[in-house]
View 1 (cartoon, helix red, strand yellow):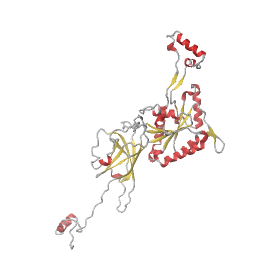
View 2 (cartoon, one colour; view 1 turned 90 degrees about the horizontal axis):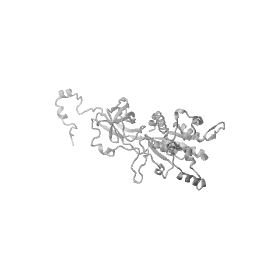
View 3 (cartoon, one colour; view 1 turned 180 degrees about the vertical axis):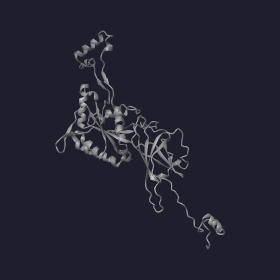
View 4 (spheres, one colour; view 1 turned 90 degrees about the vertical axis):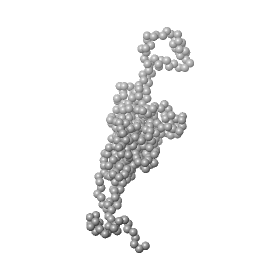
Length: 430
């Protein structure tokens, strides 16, 4: 147990050659000074929101994923790659952290942030092999098939389509490569939520169905069957989750406002329930119910109680006026202006829509609506059976006037514009 062997073999022999020691720069035999070891980057979090217009596949001209990355040593990253549903996609670094000043005595690292834009698919995989064999078990759950946001398979074969809840993930992974290693992280995605509110009979459900019928999402004839146990209907269209609920009960307006406030605050605490935009739905053929303000000096729309709760939290809102053709053409402009003034809404944040076909029966159709069992009905049927058919006149008879669905696409574009203008606030809350 006397002389212990040298930790570094060969140093004992080195003592016999002092000139060699000087040449190697070893001032003290047995003392080796190690250089600073560069640690690998660490990704603490990677968050993003589903881009507007997302339909389940990465498109060439689609909106990119804006991924915010937080971690340590991110300035060491030399390559950034991304996978969306198993497909390698192009990346652009929008903001990159600067190199922090190095200090041997500073053990506490500074949290760094970086934003990466994930764009269209690459024509070929990255030249550098990102996913090594040692990393494959951690990412064996990556789905190679594109995720279809419009529908997913249900365990019940009787249900053909089921709308995806915003909590259902899209497989998005970020890979950061330094000079020595590659670190990766799954991106936490959030879908922006747009809530439809309005009085009973405002046309919210018809508008919700019309929005779900836009784009590539199939139209469902009986959408209520998808949510038999819930008063709330949710569906994703264009990368946005639209939420429809029961109409506001004017008899319990105070309770409705309190319940609405609690739901909005629940979204502040739980980001999966966060409301990003309010769509106030009003029927053009209805009057705006009023209530007296607390000071009793003025009257306000009843739904302004709910809008005030949203404004207090900085949540934007737009106005959707439904049942466009229920008012005659020469009265339509004045009726719309009255609604805008009543809710103090601007024309740029309002859309007038017709969410379902509006049928105006012709005079010929109305003349055939006799009372059942009357003598006039029997006499009319007798005439229709035995009267000669005027083939020349039939093509010129007036048919029922059917006004098509109108303005729904413009409303969705308005929603996207407002969400786009508040995108930074949505990204900060992820």
